[in-house]
Length: 283
Ligand code: AMP
Ligand code: FE
Ligand code: FE
Ligand code: ZN
Image (tube, rainbow, N blue to C red; front, top):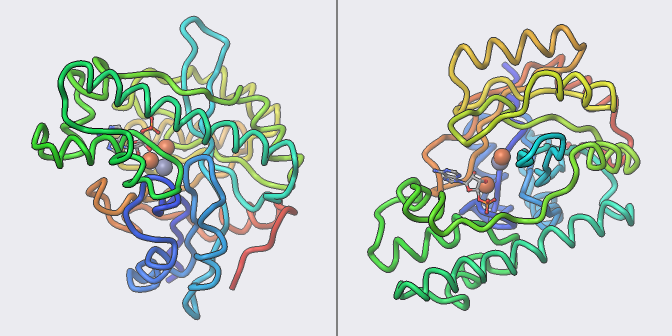
């Protein structure tokens, strides 16, 4: 059995396993293929590649913070990008800008919390991110340490990071992101496109337009999709000729999902690999 998990986070963003620990955990979980897809960074690629156990194939990727500006207010969304050339200047500059904005935004959130007397600090939060892409889970970690919430989930409630202390981040226009990843030889898959639990979702019509613009696949099997949403995404992909993926979106202890909880079929994986020209899979 080939077990393929194409969406996993490390300490290069908001996961809790280092890239080396992540690939070892992937092999231990019985995966044959795993992708490292940290938010807006390729910073974990080299460490994951160096630590890759025999028998585990590594797909290098990232999860890009994007936004659809076709409605008011615009809708944020996540685009998985696989096997792109990280040295391609335009995409590299986009990622650097996103990471820089994540820092400024996290600092703003910390300031808002501090103004309300919450005893956390930017050095603490930045220390949790440890040089990786900063995200709200790192602020959640500080709120847990301060005894204000017990879990990351609780920290995402509306009275904390979900709404009251929410600050939007800079995102890439999703059409520009699809184009930039393609120009860097990579392939894009729309992450958890119907996950209403995360907020507003885009209409199917946008996915039709993205497919025409070069989007390659849709992530159907994901813990944030209901069975009906999974079936809907799968059917839409079928109509549009897009590949279907399934993935854990593993984040270590920042989430409860386990590696390999959802997986991708071998035929879909092969199509992704065949379409990419940026960097090879390793293994
Ligand atoms: P950010 O990217 O900084 O906006 O933070 C969102 C990230 O937090 C996403 O990558 C999620 O995977 C992660 N996360 C962990 N727990 C939750 C939760 N309960 N709700 C939303 N996002 C969560
Ligand atoms: Fe995340
Ligand atoms: Fe995501
Ligand atoms: Zn993710």
